[in-house]
Image (cartoon, rainbow, N blue to C red; front, side):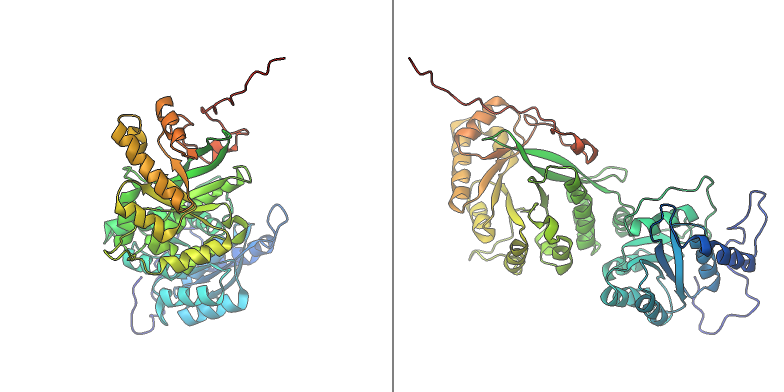
Length: 453
C-alpha cells in the first residue's frame, strides 16, 4: 500500500478488487452493501455452531476499504465475532487493551509507529491476544520484524479469503472447515520476494510446515518404550536437512521463532504417548536461554520434556561460549525439565560437554553405535564414553542400533536405553495413537535356574 504524506483525495478509488464479495453471477457489491451484510451477519456470529463462545477478532489497518472487507469477511463466519477496528498503531494498541480480542489483524505499515510497534506493545500489554500480521505484499524484512516482535501468524491481503479465515483460526489453534465455494483474493498478486532465504524460513514457520517424527526409545531392562527422540523436519519442497533450515533461520534472525514452531509441533505428541514417557527435543543453547522458550514449557508438560544439546563451543579453560546456559538450565530444571548431552564420543570435548551441562541422559554419537561391534578399539572407545557419562550420573542412550551384535555389546557396556531399526521405525503423531506402541524389539528373557527337588 502507498503511504502518501497528505490526506487522500475523496475521489480516490478503492484499491481492493471491487468484486471480492461478488455473487455467483459475478455481480459487484458496493462497500455500503458489504457493511449492510456485516451488520446482519454479526448477529449470527455471536455464537459458534456448537454453542461455544466465538473467536473475537479486531482489525488494525489505515485503509478503510480493507477494514470494511475484513469486517464483512469475519461476519460471514459464524465462529468469529468482529469486536473493533483501528487505523494507526496507537489506536490498535488501545483497541487491544480495551477489547482484549482473541485475535487482532495488524497491518505491517500503519501510521503512528508502524505495525512492529503495535505488535510489540500488544504482546506486552495483552499477552493472550494472538496477532496476525497483515501485508499488501511479500515484504520479508518487515515480516521478520513482525514475527520477532510477537506476531503469531502472517497473511498477505493477496491471499484468498479462505486462507485469511484459516489463518485466524490457526492463530488460536482451532480447526476450520473451508466454505463450499472458493472466494477471490483481496488484492492483486504480490510483488517478487526480496530475500528468498528469509522469506522461505518465515513461510515455513507461519504456514505450519515444520512437523516431526518420533523415534521410540526403549529401556533395555524392561523392554518398554519410555520416550521418543523428536526428529523435526520441514515439509517444504525441495526437501532439505533440518540442520540447513536451522542455519538459514539463524542467518535470517529467526532462529528462536523457528525452534519455537518446531517445539510446538513436537509437543502435539504428548496427547498420544503414555503419560510416563518423555520427548527428547534438540534445541540450540541460544534458544534455550530465552524467556520465550522457557515460557513455552509450562509446568503441566515440563517433567515430560528432555532438552538435547549438541557439544558446546568450549574455550581452552573449559568455559562455555554460551555463558547464560547454566542459569537457563537451572531455571528449566526447577520446572521439571531434564537435559540430554548429544553426540557423546571420545576425547576432551565430550567430557567438557558432560561436565558443563551435567545431563540426566547422554546420547552416544551414532557413528560409535554403528561401529561398536566392529573391533576391540571401537568397543574401548564406547566403553570410555559410557564411563564418562556414568561419572556425571547420566543414563546412556544409544541410537541407530540395527543388529543383535550391536545390542549385546551395548548392553554389556552398561547402556540403559536404545533406539533405531532394531526397536522400530520413527512414527508420526497419528502413528503414536496405537496402544500398545508398535516395536520390533524384544527384551532378553530373564535367566532362571532350575531347582532340584
